[in-house]
Length: 434
Ligand SMILES: O=C(O)C(=O)Cc1ccccc1
Image (tube, rainbow, N blue to C red; front, side, top):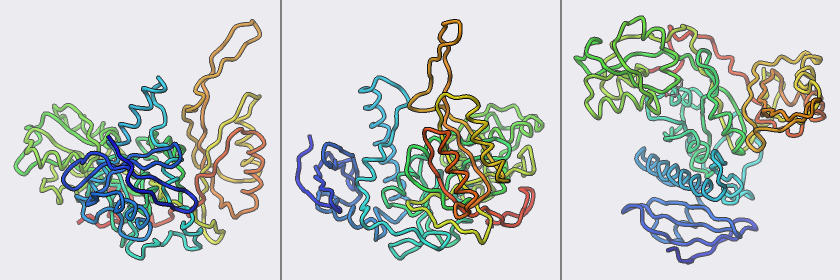
């Protein structure tokens, strides 16, 4: 049972906080209501609603809800379990699967929008709280995403999150300033989950990192290849090493873990002598494992492109190469997709990526054909990247034409292209993993 104990205001919004049951000695569940909306929130070291209100009010300008990895991990874990619960509740009420998990409107109610920093002229937003930029990533220390985050913000403070969605929420709730998340890999293709999450959340792409990825096979010291029964890793990493694993003639099953470095951590923690992980050399060092095979990715040009996400967009510029990412949907019509894409071709704007995902609100439409029969047509959201800045008049005109043909259009971000020197994954990483 929750009891209403405290009210507070952020801007024009009034909130009521009710105290719920304790989750642990240090954590308690609170429910925050704004009008008829409610959001479950758990806070470390907070035992009363007044301190929750203070922590929400201050989180934009202070260190947030904890400093150590353990603190971050536990607040992230709570966030994700809350999300799962919300999803189950939603599924029960709506009777449908795959409904939106995070209600971003509710979350943005909790963000003190009156105090949001204005778009910055610098390329990477500077945090308002005055300390290091806090960068959320999915995985645990030693993950490639952590390396990408370090490339994005060499002096940042890195916040491991157990799910992609939690990294989005960490930025929305001011726990982090940026999230760095993988979008696509040159061998394994798109990370669809993150494309879907880009649409469900209101964050902006403010930069990209292209990280050469060098995979190693890691095992406990003394373990030989012939001792192995199992290889565990992130699904993308398993896919990127499939041919090499076959060539090594290992008699192993493959199992998915939630992160490459997470797989290494599991082996070390559980002392698994029949299992190897695919992960980075840095993960080997962090978790006390040996590298028993190095450079096991199938293609030496194995690069993952990560997006840097922030609450505010950056101001697009024209003094360096920019990429713009958009997402759109269209209704019936002849050759609409062709027309949209030709808007860019006629202006000599290069498209670098197109991805389609099921249309979440309207996955299928029924179309009557000439014989009076009803056909089912799948509906899509189209994600397109093009090489131009939104400060460029050609790009602005192109988008105003795209708007003519589409029923929905959103600019996900206009940001500098990562043009840092190319170093194939067989070579030295920009992020020093030693
Ligand atoms: O699991 C990791 O380490 C990640 O950061 C995701 C990932 C997996 C494989 C290649 C690049 C990123």
